[in-house]
Length: 290
Picture (cartoon, rainbow, N blue to C red):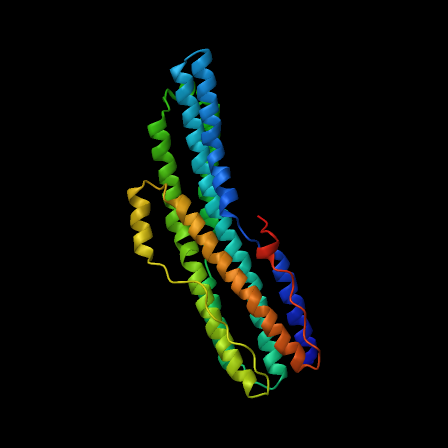
């Protein structure tokens, strides 16, 4: 395969990945989490006005609280899956660039070493425990919805808002420890290793007459221990902010990578005898999709 073929592969890879990388919207997520509280507020007002049944109000509050925890767990899980999918696409991105450099006659041993470092930073095996946590909480959530027919009459267990809060906090804490600690570190660690890979690629290609642009990091390092402390003292509710924080950091990395890839593709296409490319539409300006 020629260098021109590898250049075409790289362009196709970037265009496909650009279409599949998803921008997550914190405002839509906040609205989704707020829906149970809005529903409880309206339901409480109606029940108080019509009957004033306190047990029914408590049951309604318990169901809403369980739903909030469930939504937080789902958001954590989806955030992790989004990062994992991005890593898989970037592995293909680096692999094609290594093949392109090899076709130009570069020694790719160091590039492959940097690629292995990127894979090491991105690797994680928490998908199975995360799925188990989500499935287990779903069972608890179903029991809550069926209360009191299942929970109370069969087990003699009276569910109240304090127990619901404690149970939800335990599940979210497990998801936080097993999954979200990785998700919080991911944007900075992933981009840092990618910047090093591009720097080595730039060094190798420069000797072959191809001067590609430098990749400038956009994600700042986070003091992880501070967020863990705030998570613990808020009983897990701080996880809502953590979801937004990871969304913002990952979105910044995606915007930065899209911008860089346009410059990189332009340099490669021009080197291969083409006329360069026109920038693709900016997703950030058009309106992000969820």
